[in-house]
Image 1: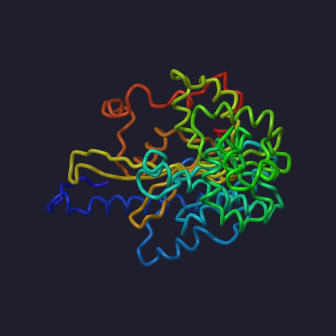
Image 2 (image 1 turned 45 degrees about the horizontal axis):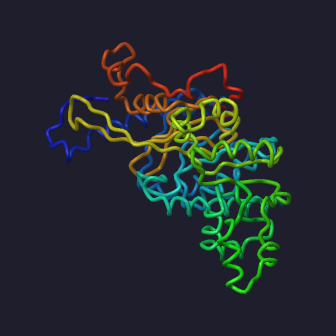
Image 3 (image 1 turned 180 degrees about the vertical axis):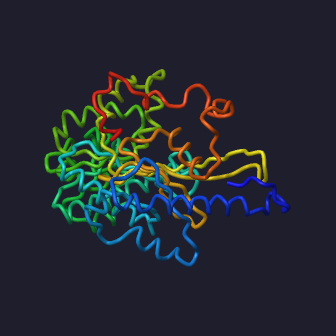
Length: 386
């Protein structure tokens, strides 16, 4: 990438970005034939898509049905048209995992649009959106695979709230899709009983309609909106209640929850090694925004990308282009750490530091991975990495 200083003001300069995208195009032209003729390589760079072709990219990013060969190769670009399309992509990956006998499955994607697409930004919106996505995937599992699916929320309070909000959606769903509670207790000890009596329902009706610990009819469980503390309850449920039946964690943000393990009043780190490491990421889209300072105009480069995985395809690093389409720049059979993904983006943009550069060590620091990303003998499974 040329680093000659342009004459225009930095805030109006677009030549640097243009040269970056030209470099991406050239790299893609060199690597595309090799990728088509052989197994996925370690690094692959995709070209910028012009504005005139944007609609065609979006149409091909979420086709009605992709063959298994296409699914195993991964995607060169990804731009789902809607959250419904993303849920359908997630379902396809979950279906493949279920067909291969996987019992602990992870699905992760941004629950709400925007840079702060997580629980901290808008908790109620985040919680309700995840329940809605779970119902969409559950309905698809029931309709296409004949599975009875229970969507699990953490406790009775969340259960009663979700049941009220999604009353119409649950009414339209088939009998094979239900809301349920991870701890098995749908009602409070006193509140619901008095409420039923005052409402003229009596005690018997309520008890018949909502039995506690009612999990026998479910073939698959989808759990949403858990906190770090509730991960131990999830482990107990998987081992004792699910008893080999598939359990899908949808948008649990396990990487965020792992960071709390080992802290005061939180579960020990061993929970990851013995339980969370057993989850197979079926559909994984984790977006990140970064910036990079350079010594020429425009001096600060803002870029964004994602770690992407769509089972059974390999793990991929994506860069977000100007038109919003995510383009693959690297892929590997094993999971990328955040530091590795960031480095792949920098290499694709041509603004990475040389390996022997002192600046590289100053930018990255001494430790470049989190404790759960490091290899450890205590880890009972590598399913979460592959």
